[in-house]
Length: 74
Length: 232
Image 1 (spheres, rainbow over the protein chains, first blue to last red):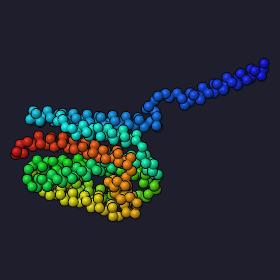
Image 2: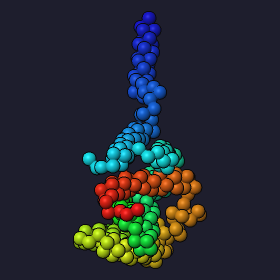
Image 3: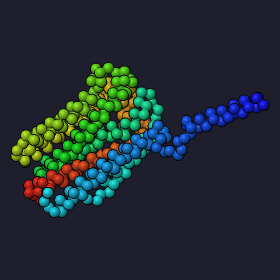
Image 4: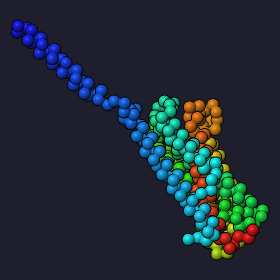
């Protein structure tokens, strides 16, 4: 009886241990942004800068076209 | 907005540069490690600068052939954005050098200050800085246009020895120096890895087109301002 009880406790602890290990490295699921040392975060940041830069240049271009049409600088 | 196909092309190429440049595989080199990806950014700044200076040079010659004031405005603004690219190339180069040459390769400050490409690029940029000083010192616009066009041709002639010839004749930390086993690392197909070339050449085109776009904006602004001076 005592032997059975100690075995059961040991098994239970082993199960607990495995869940603890799971919690350590398997909790991140399908997380693209955290893979490869979070390089995708860098890519996203740079893309935001690039898109912002191009939107800004586009706006300037639009403004310039308007000014050329009105034929006088504001 | 003037709709031009190359503006969209520039955006697509730079998107590809950033996504491909960070995610595609690169050669595994000691000391350089992942910093080889700077090839798509730092080196492209210098290529953009060279191409914009070449365009500026062409417009200066066109000015001297026709004395059309428009060409002077073109030459000035291409040189200005080219100089901006050069400054960006310098700024990015300092960061790259401090993490490879200084810390990982153990180069002394003396050997970096003797680096011929740094000195040559500094000379070239200072010559172009003098171009803008020269322009600013004239009050007569015809004289300004004529003399600065001649000076711009001289400045372009100085670009050859200072950034293309001398760094390849004397020892250099940059690739392409005599003694190292590489020839021209940017353009020789045997020296640059094909994986790098796949992103590098589109990156050059993309950055240069962005520079041209910004330049056209500056030109249009100036043309608008000086509308009364331009006889068409």
